Length: 398
Image 1: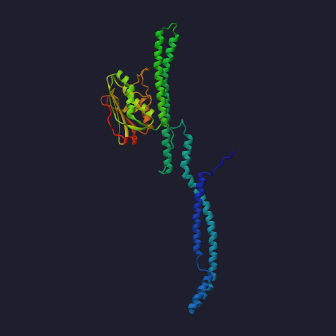
Image 2: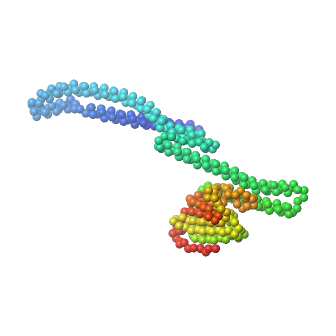
Image 3: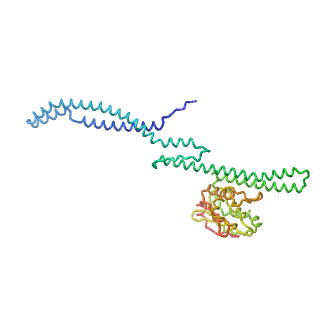
């Protein structure tokens, strides 16, 4: 196994980078200063100038000769000054480098302190400590934004874990009810010394009812898990066809309850998973039928406008408090708790609808009706090609 190479810490790399920039800048300034002082004319250049001046004007020759005599001394002093300046500059540059390393190390540490705080919080936060936050204070810079984003992510994780725990607990409770019915019925019947055929038939009907409820519950859980996974198909589909199919399948149950159904099915083309979209509309229709009163009404409408496909389901029923509407979209949430084991409601209908809508990047809204019941409207991105290629003819209403 090859040994793992350890890279220098980011603090050390920042320190070296700052120090190199500082020393390079100082060295450039010192070099420029040295070049400016070394730019004075040399003795040879001064002698050539005096020769030219003497040839042009003999009166200036004596002055130029006197100046030339002093040039040797001037050049010597200048060279000595430059050497002393070079030595002093080298010492100052070395001292600046050492001091700069220390200062840059401290500055880099102060700048990276929020990252250490974030790292410590990340190691401390786990599944059982999702309530903790970094809560970084300071100016609104990039590190503060990173810490705030991390806190928001942890908040979403905490909500997700809490929802998952609540969902598992509710699902376990819901599944325990039909299983308990089956087991209790079997134990009671087997405990009798003599049991009649009618008793066995009654227990068989109870078992079928309980297993049917468990089957519907498991089917709903699978649909919910599939829609939340994000692994869905992308095929052309029409919500009007899905609504017509759902109404046809639920027609017998609606007729048994004495419900009147009114439909206005116009083209509502979308791109998505046909199986999940059919389940979405079927859940809306089933919810409208099962949470209704005998002799009530159901209205189903589909269509498209402004690049969006719409499906609206309105039903009569009991009055629903406006503050309780959002709770209906949570798994296993019901407004009443007197459901029996034989009820076809699993408490997952609208939760599955919301999950499927979100998987298709749409929205779902619900509002209580003035006379009782609920109106649910689903909006999904329409299939642009299908919308552009067809008009909106009204279909037959029933």
